Image 1 (cartoon, rainbow, N blue to C red):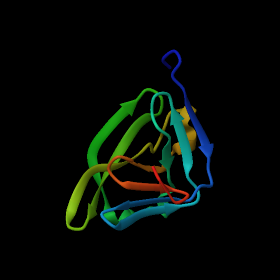
Image 2: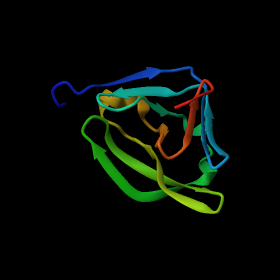
Image 3: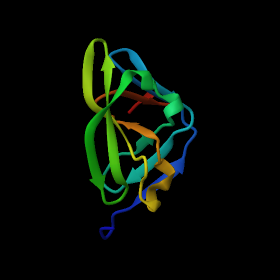
Length: 119
């Protein structure tokens, strides 16, 4: 890892709701919070708490040296496709094992509320 760069995961119990254009995409009381140097807290949610029926896998994959290889999904909402809106690390590196298979939304592209407060 880069000097001074860290990631920390914590099992949370906050109530997280993700909406897009008035459509609820996810609601969970079991987020895993990932804090990474230089980035805001990310809320990784179990697939069972996400409207996966609205998601379509894409061919996009990225690699993070601190988490591993990510896969992406687009969301079809209101007749519009929002490309690569969601990502997951199906098989992260050991330091990020707690987020394996969980889904995370780009917070600047959705409406994200945590315990009723907008993020």
